[in-house]
Length: 370
Image (cartoon, rainbow, N blue to C red):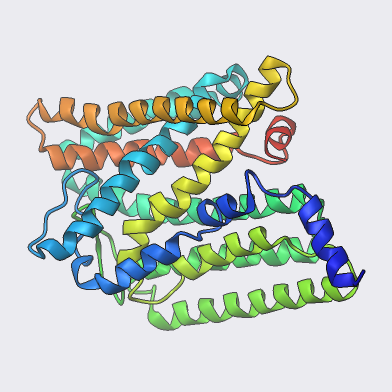
């Protein structure tokens, strides 16, 4: 048997995937974004103003926009909203999480609720929330990919060296900085999110972003060389899904100029949320198996559990993102503004909660994910 066959055999036996190679590569590593990228390419004229709000999309582009509009709505209701609800299930559904993170569980929602009500009165606060959302969303998306990359490495029993871990953190930091600079730069072509103007900063200039992109490229090249070196020494290299997950996030969020519409139309639902739901469902399944005291649920039982849990998340998502804005609109607030402000409040809470409840160094988290 050749060394290549031995490596492939070990790769297959390591059980690194959450579900199945095809499912993981499509939902977690960003595989199905290739199809959406093609749609975006052919209908790019329609996507310039495609997302005005999560439930209200208006444009004069006619039929060309319909396909983009349908995709956005499907992703919003079936993936984005349930993924936010999944965080609440984990935070408030586990006593240890509530007790360990009391600020995030109790005080932060109150503060964000007050900010929401103030933003209805003072529009500049809504603009601030939109800008904060963009900044934290970029960090959140890349940080999640970093966590998933580490998760796959642990599942493959591949231990990153100190330098590799440092290099990976450098890639994450540079990618986050470059993506934030792009979104808040006066050189960036689009300066609105949910119809709110973002703050711009002139010192986030094109030359700075190009330097960051160069740094990212050099660090990626170094990481690839290190993995090739591992392979040459017959050592375990970074698993393919780990590398693809990180590479997809970097490519999506640090490309200069034209990717802006694609990022905010497709990535939150069809990359980030699908990742999150895949990981969350895997964790929920392991918790269910532990409660039932069984090693593995049958395939039919797993399918039934996933459908039932997703339905629960779907309903909670509708209550959060549709019912609450509707109630706010009854007080005289514009419905679209209410949708945007509720979205910001829930999202900012989601970012904070996730930073607490999904840490691989936590023994319980590591047990359910690896």
